[in-house]
Length: 243
Image 1 (cartoon, rainbow, N blue to C red):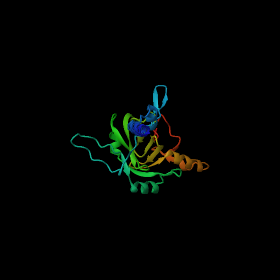
Image 2: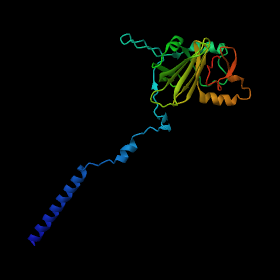
Image 3: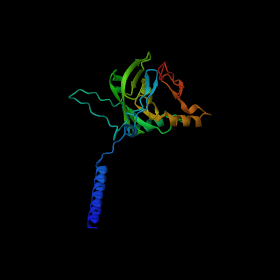
Image 4: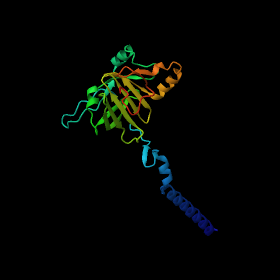
């Protein structure tokens, strides 16, 4: 009888010890994460292509800023200031009093242009494409400049890393400035005189344009020759500020 009790007790102890060791090993075994789960947790940019051309990379290169005040040039490296406009309350007053804000403009912001900077940029330089509505900027790399027969100058700058759909086209005339900024967030229209301008998202302008469509006159502006043009139907092959 004593022998049986000892054997039974030994069996219980051994069983408990084996159960403990099994549980301990189970806790210390690392849990492997599958490749699928890792890839699933990492966001992947969606590209839009046409043939071999990348229309959109799906990457938004927008950089928030606390202020649109101009940066000083770096004298040590002779770095050129790329700020081409900044916020301006004076701009709103001047353009409104001059009747240069079409009725269709909506959600606009008012800026003061650095005309000297715009006229002096060269291919390969980088522009700070500041968008007041978002409180930040896109960087534009100048890749094409055209001087028109009437003296107007058009600067084209693509947004590096965003795809071929996104770029800025700005035309500076003697008395007027026009521009289109196609960004991953919206297309922005810019219009003004030689020093001041308004900038507004085209999505808001289109909605307002539809609401004002019966009169249609609210979206007309005068170019440098005194002729009226629709801001939604600017010529693609000629300067929008003149001939």
